[in-house]
Picture 1 (cartoon, rainbow, N blue to C red):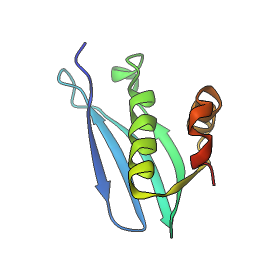
Picture 2 (cartoon, rainbow, N blue to C red):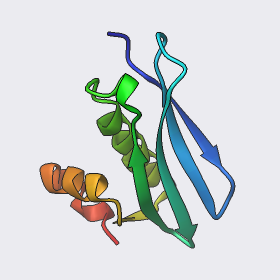
Picture 3 (spheres, rainbow, N blue to C red):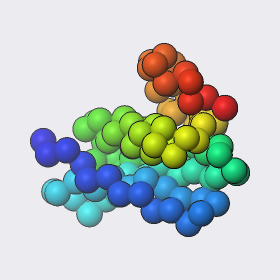
Picture 4 (cartoon, one colour):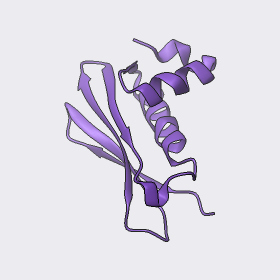
Length: 96
């Protein structure tokens, strides 16, 4: 399987990471809102037709990489993002 293409859609105070795969029109999304230097990860949604490919994990990795690059911290309001933080203790420094 090809890796999903991850795109950042940033509207300043809110945005999302989107994941697309070559063989589908479906889009995986991780939505967030920003207050200062804190991103609150609100929802992660991967449609069933592209599920089971690790797309949600790639979306969280993109969120983490983006926050780290900007010097931001993350509130994992989304249960999937919270679970990912538990699996990756090396991300603990990003928790708000």
